[in-house]
Length: 637
Image 1 (cartoon, one colour):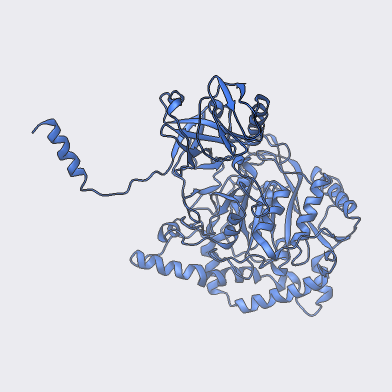
Image 2 (image 1 turned 60 degrees about the vertical axis):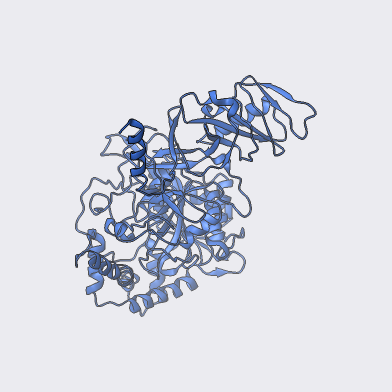
């Protein structure tokens, strides 16, 4: 048999095997930076006259410029703006250019740029080194890659998740579904792909156009698996066939989902080193880099604080799961009024307490994202209360943190022209409810009963049954904290009905006596308390005692039991002597604002107003929320 016959026979044999071959995208490097090219071809451009652009490469970078007219000055100005505003764009994309003027497409050559637009009476020559690109495409401005066959692909920059904030990177695979990003990068962590900011223009319908967001891994996203912080859960169930309502609201507003983010198991509160087993807790970038991130929105807090390339994250707050990570990492965060957005396709901890909240460095984006997610259930108002109640506020400027807190309160009260009074929850409750037990005793078991006896039938029991059916009667591994908590719920004589009754009684008192609805200012007063003052570092290399049910009543309980909103704002940082570095480092100082139930829009307008007045500032990404800076254990890659 000759060589030709062998080849034909071999091809015929291979033809028996059937399968659909499809592209999952491409990974390339330009100027030392890694990029992901999504598989979807956005348009085509004729490349017959510019084969030299490719040399030995499969793809060539180029830049799209738009305008009513293009001159050398226009191009210089546009590309300088691109470099300043967009972390995806770099000078390597200037190897080729494609100009769109009044929706007319124009020829660019490596020796001269000839443009003839609708407003041009004759061709305009501009000295440039750009390569020829011609065609009939309509493209947003910014960076692209061109294949040798003329296919145009978007440029998505790849970043390493150096702080371990994500459980899975993601990319849109269709109009309403997502898939796992098929790309990697140096850094011993996941690669996260982000698109050029230049592709998007915010509109009234798309106020979050191009905003990059990470999603806590208790929310379903169509096409992706959900882990709830448990490896067995992740592999037992198929990818979600629907997207959780809060996530879908953000997508509908134009947000770009870049991945799912680490959560403590089943959204229970866990501490680094002591409790996390199925997955590792994310790393707090602040200070020495080895402080606890708090939980359960650990990944969201770490990502919002660590990464300039990540704009906002979606968490959930049942007993402090957004507020605590926001406080210890010096970013904005919130527990909204309960019930402000429905939680379909979201893992429950306690439906009586669960809420959906955000974490971000930017107070203006905070307001925009909240408006998009809570939709018609949030009303923005700029009529502010003229009374402030404080809980546990320092009175002497004897530390840097206390000085920051005292000065901040003075600035806020001056901004609002408000009277300030101290408030004590314990004494106020006792005065209003003399026949009831103390507030600490009355509500001592309310939280642990609600989160265990509500989560057990909704999450644990069906999970155990499904896992047993798939694995010959076996039970899955459960981290120590949820296991202990579920055990408490099984054995306590307290009931959900009693816990809800106690919560309802407290809510009725609080909403009629402490933060009362007002027809003009929404809330008759504000309640401020200290979120964190950096005085007590929380090292992740410290071993703790065995976990216990989360009994008790504290500042975080006020919002959960009253259903009133609670918003965290970073106000600065204070020093501590790190046992990790043997050096003075800095950790965030944060304040919590509360108002009457339903006054989320007023609080957000107040936060933006304080920002515009210079009283609040945007938080920086990196080691410090005030000055930024490189995170100690890594260098940018």
